[in-house]
Image (cartoon, rainbow, N blue to C red; front, side, top):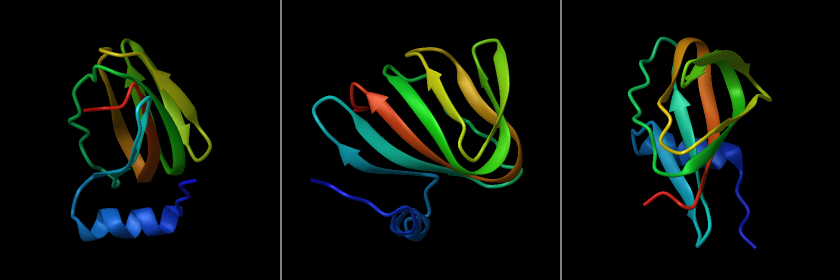
Length: 105
């Protein structure tokens, strides 16, 4: 079993000065913690994998393709592979659990 604590992942991500911390990489999936502070510009590009976002804290908007939704703690959003997407209008620091399948390379 692999078990993780969100506050420990956030501390590790913060120490490494990155917006994204991959903490799990398995044969069929990978997972990471994505952090976007208030007012940050999300510059990510479409991925080759399906992904799921689970918002752990914060508030903002997420556009996937030509659809936009408001996200906050408890929001879960599926993003198909190769579809353009980005977070924007981040009004509270976002912390997002990201799951890729198959795993990101």
